[in-house]
Amino acid sequence: MQGTYLTHARVVLEDRVLEDSAVLIEDGRIAAIEPAGARPAREIALRGQTLMPGLIDLHSDAIEKEAEPRSRVLFPLDFAVAQVDRRNAAAGITTPYHALSFANSEWGVRNNQTAAEVVRALRAHRRHSLVDNRVHCRYEVTDPTAVDVLRALMDEGAVDLLSVMDHSPGQGQFKTLESYLQYMMGNHAMSREQAEEAARAKTRALDGSVARVEALLAHAHALGIPTASHDDDSIQRIATMRNLGVAMSEFPITLDTARAAVSCGLPTILGAPNVLRGQSQSGSMRAIDAIRAGVASCLCSDYQPSTMIAAAHAVASQTDLSLPQAVALVTANPARACGLDDRGRIAPGLRADLIAVARVGGQPLVSHTWSAGRLVFSTHYHPDSAHAPAVAVAA
Image 1 (cartoon, rainbow, N blue to C red):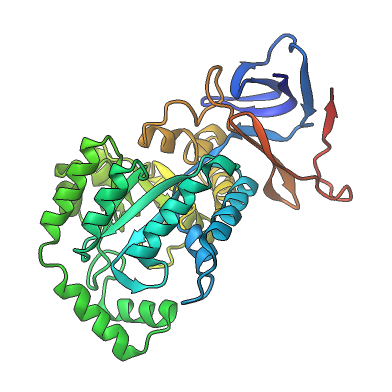
Image 2: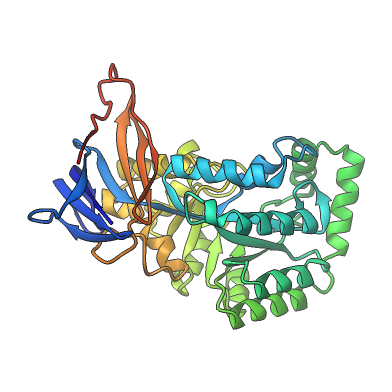
């Protein structure tokens, strides 16, 4: 199989940046960096674009909007899966973890039956996939009916990451009852009366949640599935989750919570949209503050895949982190957090998940994406742009 020789690139390694360098891809792997001479290979001259590892997104809700773009408007799931696969390739995300919520029959796609169908639709699409699509199942602790569904999916080998979350009012994301009510009315078109009843039902369903969480996490650990907690809001909550064997903390609410997580060995996952917007959509801490404090391990797309590459570059320009350190937040660090030792860095022998990034109108935009050495996305920017990439391909 003919290799691919990427030349004249600014190559981001784990500890430094190589200017006007080259990378050779063979058989889906990175064969060499700055080889003295490539064996017969198709050459792609990147002309100063930045070459970095493919992005690894541990939490992406984007599949939900593809499946249900408006409340109670569901598209065919095979269509939704194909579209989100294309979106991720264009965003440079070569390993997305699609986050599906299991919350009984609360609303739309966030219920057990539909979520399980989406998981199986993702699996069915794998042989057609542009990128390495994975599944992140989110268990709502107030749902006793999801336990058997999730155990079955884990036994099928359909779950790559399991997180536990509590969206009852008065803690976590919903610090007050009113914040919960406003969310339900705004996002799910509920009347105030319906939202109030949903809040009461959530609170009642907390009974027995601890035992359910313990059982699910134990099952995941037995199968070697990584686990995470969601919206941790106190040092005590971190200690509880750590004692249960949880391996990551998603969206810690405060700096003190994030510090507690990192201090006891839990990587933290924060939202790239938070970095780009400069604030949390739920009023929690700013991700950029956590990064500056050294307590942010990973960035995820949360609900918008296109923010990953933009956030990494924003971090490099707004903090003391070098470009390799900023890029690690969306590549090497999430790979380590989930035990993926074959990707996340540009090094010989690793999987050739790579992206080329051009500056267009001041924005970092993905021009090429390779997944396991296969070119799955490529675009050419308008030549009138001062920063448009000039791409030459030679046999």
